Image (cartoon, rainbow, N blue to C red):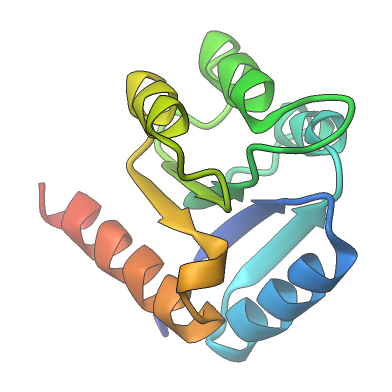
Amino acid sequence: MDEKKPVKVLLVDDEALILDIYIHRFQQVGCEVAAFSTGQEALTALKQGFAPDAILFDISMPEMSGYDFLGHVKADHLAPNAVLIALTNEAGDDDIQKIAELGVDAHYVKASLSPSEVIAKVESLLTARKTT
């Protein structure tokens, strides 16, 4: 993801270990990363002007689910140009349908992909977005 301007990534996950791993891996490839353990913290950062190129969020989080977080992002037009990625272990049929209905760009199961694979997929989505 080496570009003249660093790719900005917003991570939202209540698991500290997951955040630490992804912060480190995204920074290794030159991204600017903002990471939060709650949806409310992430919404505050967006409202204060952090403009991410990609938002990766978990679905199952206490206080505010990823569904609710995404609802606020969309309703308040907080990141209109960001690629939206559900990075979660929620993979039931109902979850997949609900995630798709919310208009995310991708849904990845954390347990099925390495951080390097996730980064490659994010890079691919960002590249596709630029060419359309």
